[in-house]
Image 1 (cartoon, rainbow, N blue to C red):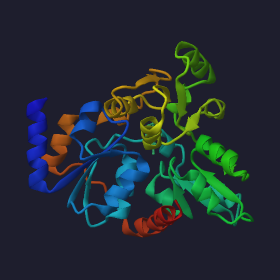
Image 2: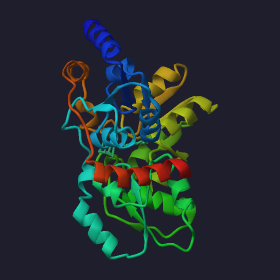
Image 3: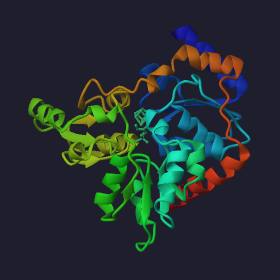
Length: 301
Ligand code: 13P
Ligand code: SF4
């Protein structure tokens, strides 16, 4: 592994590349990255970086968001098959039909969506700013929330706004159930329960805090508590443990693994740098419309 890391570092310097990794990536991929973060932080980093090449260790919609924000840069996804089933639950035609049933409504779209669906939207959001984004919309407007019904339900509860929810969800977070929370609390009394808003509403309702992945990292660092039950994909535990060596972290369920996030390996990061693969681009006509929705999100949240 040392040799592989050395090769990655030297090619990275030669290609003037930045390596960005999502908080769910394999531990060794997180460790080789220049920056590890949640979807919102990664899109901000992608927009701000001076690097010519962005190696995006995450899933395709995240690399696409980087390409939407930085069209002049080379955005590489080390495995083209690293997708997100929630994105696939909201094909363009279905989203258009959903919109057609609610003419005049504002469309709020989670970044876990295709570029073409973003292009059909008024404003994007991530798990870190969904509540702020919904709050930024005038109260007399009807709002459609696409595609995550669970994040949408959470934003509706927090804002008191009656959101109309598209029926998408994350299969990994759907594996977490209320009984898992009750079992984990009984096994680890005193531990605080941190829940990702992609979880089912009955799970979210049991959390001491509902946060994005980087929100969980900040919360754990700042909290006086010494143990935490983590209700999200298990990849986040690596970063939490690294940053808080004196605290304890327990996964809500070991089964909460996103197979797509785990498709990126160190070997594939090296191949990406060696062969400039796999290039992620967004057709300009879609990109400019998607960009408006992403820019409005950045301005609102
Ligand atoms: P975060 O933006 O909270 O990191 O979540 C991204 C994601 O895909 C969660 O499943
Ligand atoms: Fe998609 Fe869920 Fe994986 Fe996030 S954890 S990338 S929402 S499948």
